[in-house]
Image (cartoon, rainbow, N blue to C red):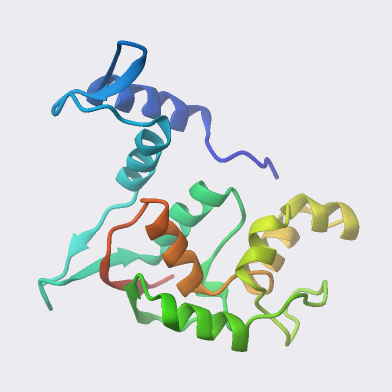
Length: 190
């Protein structure tokens, strides 16, 4: 598995995005429309956010629908790790998962009560899910090298066993500016 966040096409698209939306002068980057200074990290965050489509549902003006594939793609791009929300908790059924972003209290409660500091290095183990900080600080290749796994086994282990609490991921994506505050429905379909 190549452990890089962006493909060559992503890099090309990012450079085009920067060229279309920003300009460089006086030693810094500026938004073309507002001529306001902008940090490089903000430019990257807005680009990644643009990769994930958000559609307002007709059920309610206040809820956004994100397809599970798009949610997974965002998490994979931001963190550079295998991720599949549908595969978590013994595999999610088809349907809709509602989440409020941010939800600091619920994330903290779930993180403390439900997630583990470590899990067995076994695919489909009964013990699944790790603390967000553990997930963040672990390089997927650590498991690949340790277990001698092929790429598909590594992806399966990370998707089904070595994953963080979704509320912690959502809050972190919000904190970094990758996703807006609001109520979301993740449409789970395979």
